[in-house]
Image 1 (cartoon, protein in one colour):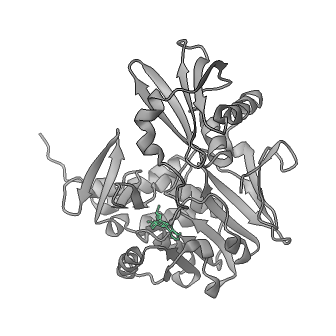
Image 2: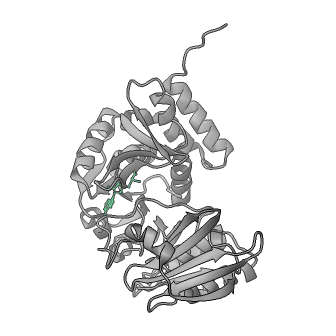
Image 3: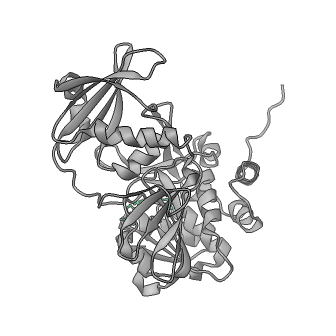
Amino acid sequence: MTITDAPSADELRHHMADRLVREGCIRSKPWRAAFLAIPRHEFVPAFFVRSQGRLHEYSQGDPAWLAAAYSDASLLTQFDQDGTATSSSTQPSLMAQMLEALDVRDGDTVLEIGAGTGYNAALLSHRLGADRVVTVDVDPHLVAAASGRLRQAGYEPTLVAGDGMAGYPERAPYDRLLATCGVGRIPTPWRDQLRPGGVIVANIGCGIVRLVLAADHSAGGRFLRGLATFMNARPTPDTVGTPAGRLVQPLLTWSGETREITLPAVLDAPGAQFLSSLLHPQVKEFALGNGDQEVRCLFDPESSSWARITMTGAGVMTARLDFGGPRDLWAEREPLLAHWRDAGRPGHERYGLTVGPDGGHSLWLDEPDGVSWQLPE
Ligand SMILES: C[S@@+](CC[C@H](N)C(=O)[O-])C[C@H]1O[C@@H](n2cnc3c(N)ncnc32)[C@H](O)[C@@H]1O
């Protein structure tokens, strides 16, 4: 039997970079060089990885820590009292795709929203020079820790503790803006602080959009391939009414009106999730097991409207709909599913977003003047 040494951090980093190149997430030499140069493990001394519904803990010194730090996982580094993750080092494959989509040129300046561990700011600093990178995080403790780790890695970008929704006007205008926390709308200061022709890459709903700023101050562009959801920007708006989590049991038993429906597409189809995350962002959606049957629930905390969809035939798209409250959530959802089915089940990359000069957001399929929807305020 041969005992082999565990791979070193350098070897693991090479494997990670090679994998990202092979999978098409890294497409250019400078980003490959950055992923090879920056020691991710030094930015994440302790973290959790969610796998198969469980959280696995890793910390420096554990035998499995180093390999986990170079896995293609989101490394959760902080939680709130309810157990919701509030900071992480994003999955490298997603980070690489967003960095490539940012399409930076030598000499560009970048504003990053969501400094987190500082790892992404280190990648940006390697690529552009730390004096061209500003990164903002709402949590001053994270900023202090990230600052120390960045310095240790040899980079001193500008780190700001504050609400990234306001950008950072002191160093504007920027050539690029990268947001690594999710937003419901592209904040106006982001457009205000970008040069015309500048690029924003951000998570909105469960898509990642790449917007180019036009001279009239509008911004438009397409979504990247694939679903992705970052932790939402804090503070999130107060949830009005009853939190959905407390309604799990009642939602299974409430009675209201009932009717038979035919689903145009399954509710958890990627296209359905994508469209509803953008067009019905307030509506919480979850699946509940009820014996052998799965029941999907929609709930709008603001109006306390609800819908319960119970599949009635295996493999057939018929279901029983129970619903109540002032908003008919199924009547709102059904046309989105029908659109997606009738359009040939398009991937997210066929959708795009335009943010008008007045801040109105419109989602479109294929072309800005094609089928489109206004995003709710
Ligand atoms: C996915 S993590 C960022 C990952 C980070 N880029 C890295 O490389 O480690 C999201 C971060 O967004 C931060 N955040 C949340 N709301 C924010 C806000 N309003 N302004 C700035 N940062 C915010 C969180 O504190 C969290 O650290």
